[in-house]
Amino acid sequence: MRKNVIAMLIGYIIAVAAFAVFFVRSAGAQDVIKYSCSAQIYGALEKARIEAFTQRTGIKVDVRVCSSASAVNSVRHGYSDIAATARRLYPRHKQYGYYETLFSKDPVAVIVNKQNPLADVSEAQLQDIFTGEITNWKELGGPDKQILVVVPAAHTASYKNFARNVIHWRKMRYDVMTFLSSRVIEIVERFPWAVSFIAEGAAKYTRVKVLKIDGRSPLDMGYPYYQVFSFVTKGEPTGAVKEFIDDVLSGPGRKIMLKKGMTPYFE
Image (cartoon, rainbow, N blue to C red):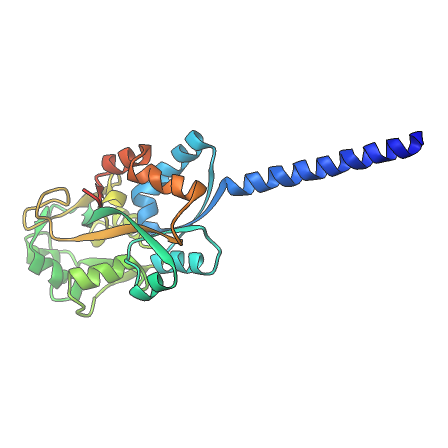
């Protein structure tokens, strides 16, 4: 009898222990967000925000930095809980249940090396640089140096937004193309006569110079070029993912966004 009781107790303890392990693992899984993030948005905001968010909430964020299209596809195939993208969802995506949360309207900055004496270009001159009509800085009042045009890969939202909003789908001329949009900063920092474009938030606090366009800096009223950043989820966000989004919309993450010079979309 006693042996039977002991056996029952041991079985009960093992069952409880197994349940406890399962519960802890389940709870832990709920506290990890799988996040695919546009390289532009990561450089502009998330590189500074994610660590602070995890320290404050205890929610771990496993981030994958990629193009906007790849980020959305990761959510589509169930590899990620949430994506951050620099391009708007297509109507068909919304029909399939994808949910878009707009959070920032960020200027597109035109960047050059700090050795470049040029400070301002017109919209027409900018279009001519990226379509090959202007190929030397002396044509803009600068030194007699060939312009090294650096662009992100054609599949990135950064490239597509610039092609649509700046050169209006004319053929883009370039010397160097990077896989990730954020890599253009590294190349412009390294080569004195390079020029490129990137989200203004990503260019902040780097060793590049941001050109004015027709006398306006990216932070001035009337600056002509912006792109919209958004979060994408399958269905309306809930739980830890919603907390992650709310951190940007109204929490401490919003302060980081404002400090980086990004404009909340809802203002």
